[in-house]
Length: 261
Length: 150
Ligand SMILES: Cc1cc2nc3c(=O)[nH]c(=O)nc-3n(C[C@H](O)[C@H](O)[C@H](O)COP(=O)(O)OP(=O)(O)OC[C@H]3O[C@@H](n4cnc5c(N)ncnc54)[C@H](O)[C@@H]3O)c2cc1C
Image (cartoon, rainbow over all chains, first blue to last red; front, side):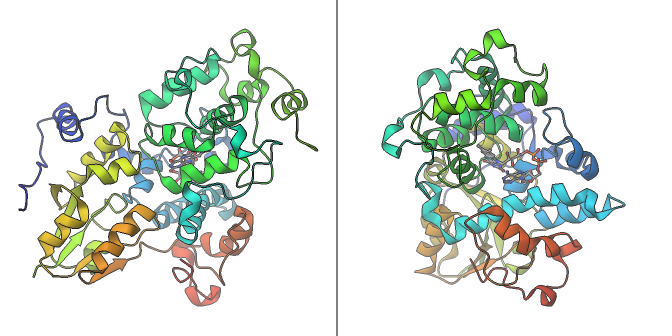
């Protein structure tokens, strides 16, 4: 039997959120980013500013990911807008290239659907997949790792349902390389909180960080976080001891069996 | 027999080509099993529902393939093409029972030849000149193989 259609009109957002709680059986809160904010995000698009500042937490990133992920705006439309907003084409190149990453991951997914959950290549960390834990430790899920910057990132993820690309990279690297957890467990955790959760972009990025889809593992250090995040997250040395070292020291500590760096 | 447009979570905009190329009522199936298999969280579900309230679609709750088959009664279904294996599994199940047409979204970049997908920059070197033009430029110039490779 065909069921009655679900409602499409609500007195306010709170009522819609309650309705989704009821039909999904889930608990939790909605993201502050709403599906109705697309035009504001498109109006704010600044390709040249993006090219210069996108790596910084307060840089001019687009926050378009959830709209793009759900087909609410096409990559073509965003690209066309980016090209129209610059006087020199080259000023739009960085943004168009990042859109290209999404297209790339989707093409990979189409050709290799099995790569979404299985290692594309072996880890290049000196460890084998069997050396990594299957499940996400509870302290990570609860944002109680004791590493302040990481806990801030996890809290942001759970509150906003959105993270700047750099924060996604830091968190994924911490989970896989500091905690030796399989990328799949981290990927599933992130998917379950992001409003732009996308199997291709998320899981293949996790594989890129892990080194199962790249030539070397991605790691970062506190100095890098301080440079790109400033005081927007807690980056004091005393609260982030495991991250506070040079790349050489961290590589030696995290990958003791790896042959060359 | 009823023709339908199946709107899934990757084509939530009113000017998506699926709306112009498809015929019949547009429906979205709120499918818990599918959402769970995608590891979707509550925030993403709210976002999707909000997007749906802005679209000319009827929302039903149930199992996607079963409900679509029941609604279509042997009619044709048009939907947006997707590389997502979970959506593709549903499309395969539907194809076994009725005529399913998939519609590509607007082109981002035309590619000459099948790209090497081992590393991003091998792909980007082939895609860049097209991607840096409005609408991806003219397909002929790039020996368009978009869509064929997937
Ligand atoms: C571990 C990890 C997990 C990720 N998970 C997701 C995910 O589930 N969904 C998702 O859409 N993106 C994901 N990304 C990619 C990227 O981090 C986000 O797309 C981006 O941060 C979203 O913010 P924005 O819209 O402000 O991006 P901007 O920097 O403004 O970029 C504009 C658009 O380009 C695309 N884009 C940019 N960078 C990437 C990238 N590296 N890969 C793919 N697309 C990109 C997105 O559609 C984005 O909206 C992930 C990255 C990492 C490292």
